[in-house]
Structures are given as structure tokens and as C-alpha cells.
Image 1: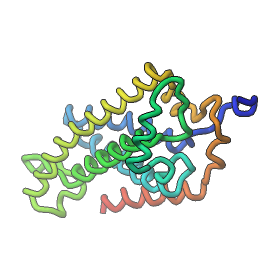
Image 2: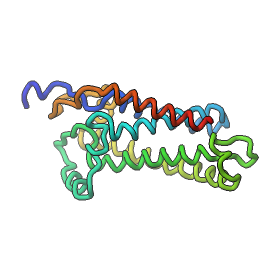
Image 3: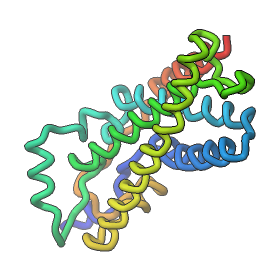
Image 4: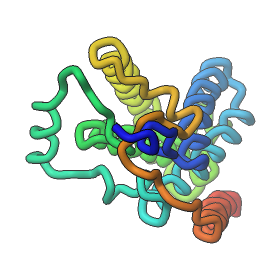
Length: 218
């Protein structure tokens, strides 16, 4: 490996990293506020997570190379081929791998469902509700509330699998996946990085996410 290839390469842009760690914090805060019936903050945290998720989905089409779904979402053949190579010495690719893509998509879908159900949910007494609960019947809002609770268990399970996978890579394959998600860099990466950050497209994503959240308040 040449000296140039040993240098740190940018593998995650800052917006992907902010989304990742902010989501970790917000899911914890949402659990805490829901368990302690602090519903004003629960709604605020939920809307913040909604904005982040909308931006991340948009960024999956308009963002930097490793953020784009087209970079890592592959077919069954690519996933099986990748799994055959899961042995030491292991060299992580720049961005998500084909198997990790399944985890990313599952988590994004579970987060979207959790937010969607929460928007329409209402409590038994009809006092605490999501911002869009008034658009559906009470029975439908109660169903949304039940699904909101059930889907959270699914989300926790997916998070557990994600953490277990990160630990497997760290312990069995000696691959540090956490460090690059903090710093954005990986030493010795075999590519030059992800290119310049498209600030204009990022601003558009922020506007779209903000407008979507604002619409829920009308």
C-alpha cells in the first residue's frame, strides 16, 4: 500500500454523522419522555426526529457518494458474495456494505413507521395526541397509538441487532466501524474519499424537512 493510500480518507460526510448520533439521542429521549409521560417534550423530540429522517431519505438520493442508497443497496447476489468474504483479514469498504444496507433500510423503515403512527396517535382519554390525530377518527387514532407502541419494540430489536453487528465487526474482524462514524475518516482507505460537500443540496434538504414539520402544525 502506498503512502498516499495510508492517509485518512473521508468516508462519511458530517450530515450523515449528525443524523446517526442525533437519532441515537432522540430515540433515547423519546423513550424517556414517553415512559415518564412528558408528552410536550415527546412531541418535540418526535418532530425533530421526523425532520432528521426526511433529510436522511432525501440525502439518500441527493447527498455525497456514501450517503446515497445507490452506493450500497444491492441485490441478493451481491449480499451473498459479500457474506462469503466475511473473514480476517477484513478491509471495510468506503460506505455501507451490501449486508449493512439491509440494516440501514430496516431501521429507516421502522423509524418512519414509528413517526407516522405517532403523528396520528391519541391516548385513551383523548387528551394527549399526535399533531395529525384530528384528521382521523378516534378509533383509527387509537389503532395508530397501539401500532406506535408495538413498532417501538420492533425498533428496539433492530437497534439491538445493529449494535450486535457492530460488535461482531469490532471483535471478530478487527474492524472499527464506530470511529469513522464519529470522525468521518478512516485510515488507509483505498479510495480518495467522497468528494466535496454539496452545501446547496444540503440547504434544499433542510428546507424540505423543515417545511414537512411545519405542515404538521397547521
